[in-house]
Image (cartoon, rainbow, N blue to C red):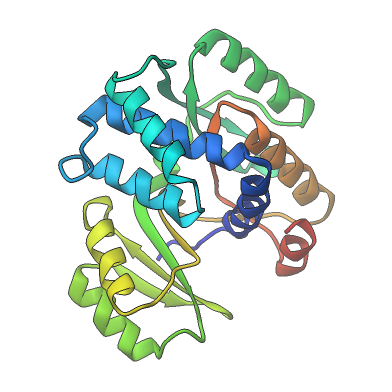
Length: 246
């Protein structure tokens, strides 16, 4: 596989903290609203909605929040209309940054993001989307199951690849096979640490020291913005710096 940036691990740890503050709940509700608006409020007939609901439940979002978001998206109750827009740019050290945005005011969001990039030593010039590939990503603790057994389960279900890092397994799938592979893992009573549709970098850029810290500061500030759903990057940092930031 193309390599899973340490930033993704940092972001996941941060998301668990965000969930306690309610910020992640808001993001997950937005995903449900947009999915329901695009494909209807029935998760059995709307794969995007099913995926958004499953992710919300994995972070213990209350059922009442999920139901309200579905009703808002399907028009049963009044709600805000969000536009999904990608924004692209570069951070310190030339790292590529791809942002997944849900906003009700594109002009305001663009101005605010441009200011963050500028203040943190980056810029929003140039295209980086071509450096990323849409994938399903599932990670499991390395001690959860034997590697050969897991390989048989996920490849039979349609996964593209299985890689082992020091302390985890990383399974990649095509977006269309993600739900089937995830269900095959759940059927074996295994609980993923991460199970999401994402954009994986095709190649990683390694930076360290002060430049890496500046790049991480930019990524974290972007991730804190209310309109930013996901931050994707090809940044790779040392395990020590990743641990420090996580």
